Each structure stands twice: as structure tokens, then as C-alpha cells.
Image 1 (spheres, rainbow, N blue to C red):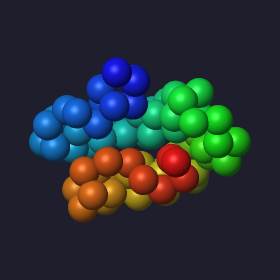
Image 2 (cartoon, rainbow, N blue to C red; image 1 turned 180 degrees about the vertical axis):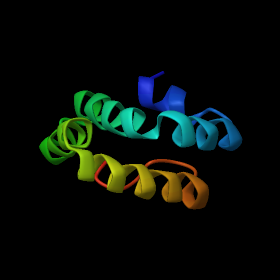
Image 3 (cartoon, one colour; image 1 turned 90 degrees about the horizontal axis):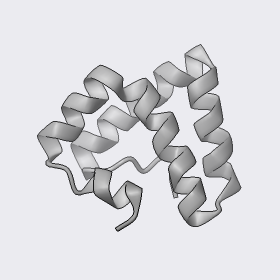
Length: 79
């Protein structure tokens, strides 16, 4: 099983709690790991920007939280 599949298989409430507490870090790391699995360069660049920039971090945190609630996975720039 891939690492991102392991995260995605967590219960929805657990992922929402993780996003609320550690979402800024989880979003960046998730995208970098997703890059290793899919080799999509845009995913890597966004993952690095999320981890390194304050505004990108905040925006990604909000977007990831919303996509976790609505689609049950991180989807924006993560494929």
C-alpha cells in the first residue's frame, strides 16, 4: 500500500482533526510524497511552496481542510 493511500484510508473525522491541528505541514508533506508516487512536478513544486511560504501555507491549509470535508481527500494540486 502506498503511503498516501494509508493516509487516505484513515476515517474522515481523524483526517479532519489532523488537518485542523497539523494541516499546514501535512499538506506539504502529502504533496511531496504524492510526487514520489506519481512523478508530477507541479505536485512537488506546490508541496515545497506550501512548506516554505507563510501565505501558501495558510491558503493550502484552508483548501485542504475544505477538500477533506467535501471529497474525503486532498485533491488540489495533489495528483
